[in-house]
Image 1: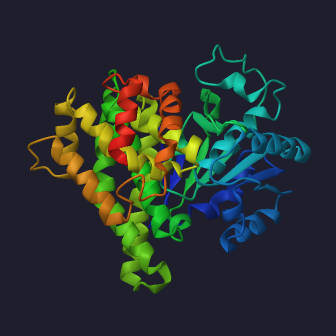
Image 2: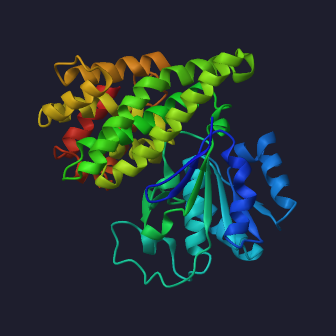
Length: 392
């Protein structure tokens, strides 16, 4: 697979082996002291050690990896101390959405004396943004959030774990090295959850209120790509890349590449907005620490059925993206449920270990979330309660 380049507007180097270009791009940025930002899981992988070792031959390198799946403010504060102590002149973000989100805000906070919440999406107006920021090179290791091409980060409060959306166009990384080989080792469950996360971004962007023809086109093509490749990616993951024949290994890389690109397309499309699925999912992550992609998957169908009443023609277009012969938008909801079963997503909240006792805590968090105002159909607290009850 060749490495291709395109800009939209982020410069993306896309293809197997793109990670090996890191050194020359750091030099092109004039960097000498890069800070690698990742999570504890990625930091323990052999290929990450190889990536860091290769950089150490030409640069003064430091690594910050004190984070897990759902980043909180305390981890950002620790990372801010690390980037300042290293006097980093570039950031290399390696990982899934959590690591990329933290890395993006670290470059923002390195030379800023204010508080991260100054950049919260619904606070405004934004700070003057006149402080310098270092260049960031993003190397995504999952195909889900698409944070590598996004202008926002999601960081939780330390005490309540409420998710805050940090937004400024300055968060958009200037360069992405999108290497599908970095996703080959993802377990089947993570592949499935992050894949449905990407699908949710694409679908909610397409259904979101407002006019954005470019986002709609990207979203529809991304949905088609997920339909083409997610089941294969999960199936290969179950067997393990090393247990595949050469032809199957090539097919595995291609499936991962398609999902990686669909993930970036989802994050590009949702500049139009998201919806009630994400509000439900953010509440699950806040209250129950549920993986974001899994949370989206669990809440997908109830919200789609709710929206079907007001945008049936949009659901039909989604149905035709996965099956050109579709005649009813309800077929798309059926397809989503069948896809979840094929890739091993639990069918209900209870099957995923979410206790019914959490319901009363989930509803107000979902109501307070910033995503559902873009939902095509307004949602009340009673609606959110019904979504959760249906998902149980």
